[in-house]
Every structure is written in C-alpha cells, then in structure tokens.
Length: 346
Image (cartoon, helix red, strand yellow):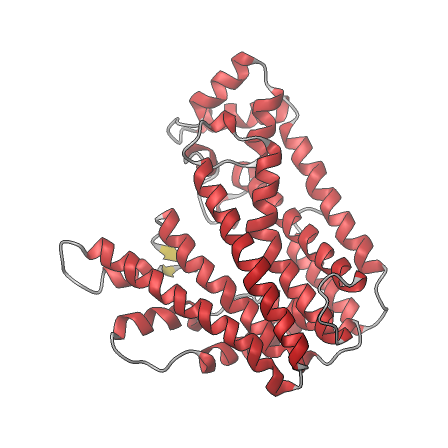
C-alpha cells in the first residue's frame, strides 16, 4: 500500500527525531536507534491515523501518538528478543546480539542483555513523551493525558502480563496449557497494542478523554479481532506454511515447546495415545516424517479446523465492525489495512 509506505516513512522520521542524540555509553544509544533505523510496516501508526480520519478528525494531530504506538512496539521487540534468545531481528543482528558482539569479554552475553534492556527502557520512556508531545500538533491536553494514561495503566501492564504468561507457559508441561489461557495471552500480547492504536485515534477524532465511549470501544474491538486473526494464522503457517514465506522452519514452534492454540486444542481433542504421541513429537528432531505425523494428528483430531474457524470468526467480526463505520476514504484505507493484515486467512 502506497499510503502505508508514506506513513512508515513519516513515522520513522518522527521517532528518530524524538530519540536522544548519541552520547556515552555509545553502544546504548546505538541500540536505542537500531530497530527504528531499520523501519517496519507501521501497521499500528496507520491504524491510529486512519481511525482518527474515519471519525472526522485530523490524522496529523495524532501523528506523534501513532509514532508512540510504533516505538512502544519496538521496545517490546527488544525485550522479547532477549527473552527468546533470538539473535536476529528483520534480517539483522538483534539489539542484545549487537551489544554482545561489540566487546570481547567473558561476560559479553550478560553485557548484551543488560544494554538491550536499558535501550528498551529508553524507547519506552520516549514513547510516552511522544503521546504528550501531540499537544503541539493540536491534540487537546485532556485527550493527550487520557491516551497517556491508557498507555501506562492499561497497555503496558497488560502487554507485559501477556509476555509473562507466554514465558511461563514454556516452563509447564506442553499439554497443561488450556486454550482459554492461550487466548487470554494473545489478547494481552498481540491485541492490546492494536486496540490502543485504534482507541487513541478515535479518542482524538471525537475529542473525548473517555476510552470507553461506544465508538471508541468499537474500533478497539475491531483492532483486537484483527490482531487475534493474524496471530492465529501465524500459528497455522508455523505448522503448515511455506518455510520461505514464514521465515523459519515449519514445525519449529512445536519442537521448541511453544504453546499455541493449535496444540492446546489438540491435547483437548486427542485420545490418550494421540496426546502421548504428540508430546513425543514436540521434542523430536526436524525429520520430515515426524513433522508429517504431527500435522496429521492436528488435522485428524480437528484442532486445525477449530483454529481456522476461530481465525475466520475474528476476521468477520472485524469486518462487521468496520462496515458500520462512516463511509469514506479512511474507511476504505482501513478495509485495505484489514485485508493486508489478514489476507492469509480470507
């Protein structure tokens, strides 16, 4: 989408301008700028700005709020990469890997994690500042404060709660995590930030400091449903997709013990023998026959169909909410945004 690329360019410029100038220690501020300099799709900034425009507001008034949502997403990626021990992000070294490899020291790994954590903390702080700075673009102060409170009181603790749950699941038996627990985790970890972006745009358009206004809440609900649909499809592709398109080996989520709705439903639907076999396959090597057997179990017990149905239901809910919004160019853009996010499902 050309419009999405334009927003991505402007958002990147806004973020880089808001970040602290290079200072000592040099590596810390290199890490603060690393992910923003690489850019991204900026789906959240687009959602924020277009929700604002659709309800009659001026999208430029929320350009800094939209950038704040992207920078908030960025610091969570920095911390997530540390937790997951991922050494790559967007095809380049992750923040902790950059710091680790910048020194020759017996404790380089700890140094890398420490510096990346601190870089993420700075990004988190600047994202909050960007929300308040939106008053310079004409956003009423009471609305800016209300959006900032949403970021601090709802988004931050909720998203961190979701990350903590996802982390804790890995230390439990793979068949002990229920589908309801995983759904709650996804709403926190994936849905809340998209809901924040949509809610902020709507609050700005309506000039309301009330996050529970019906129009505001409806768009937040739309964004949450879209995000959940995307996450579910991502999990499906992780077991049944093309490894070139997915960007990782198929079945790696299962072998690494990642808890998904697919596996949760499978353990609820399989008989004891099938459950025992899936547990064995979850720690098997990446042999093609082991992957094929795991796929057959997920299909045969109905787990794949349940997740596909859930994803489709979330897409339909998002489309229905959007269809009830004011007709115009911004709704058209949001329909394209929704299709872009969930095209692999519909």
